[in-house]
Length: 156
Image (cartoon, rainbow, N blue to C red; front, side, top):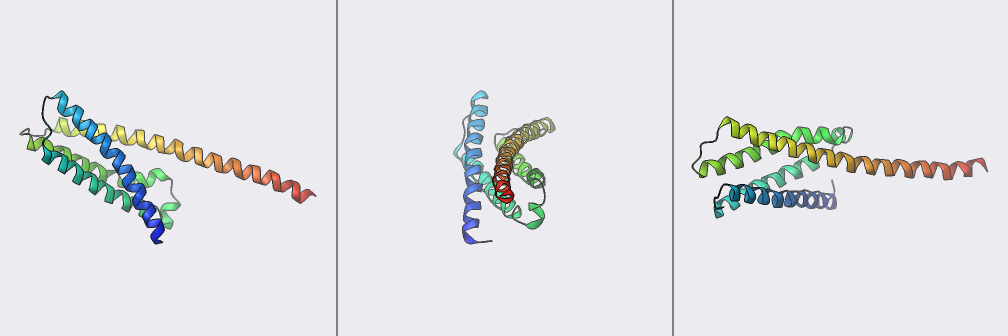
């Protein structure tokens, strides 16, 4: 893999993670506001560290996506392989912050956080599927148009 390609992968991974970080901070802000709690500075640092780890995982996933095996598989297979790692980081972060607040995490809370993660992950997969499908359809249309243009040349 070239250095330029690796730079593109790092940029794509951290751009995605930055967007997720912003949404995560918004989610944490709303959650803390609803429970009348203050967000301590250490929570922001922990959230930043967790998203940095998620960024590294995203780089690994994108580099893995460049392998011959991964290129032969649909995009969602690669995402499903890395989903448990993303889920583990998210659950560790949430449970650690809840434990710092003096609340003992319950199985119900873990199940709720897992359900929120799965729903969010599924929505992201659907969005990515439609984006990939649109790109594929556009490429197929261009190929059909190209074949039509060059079939006239062969008949002449």
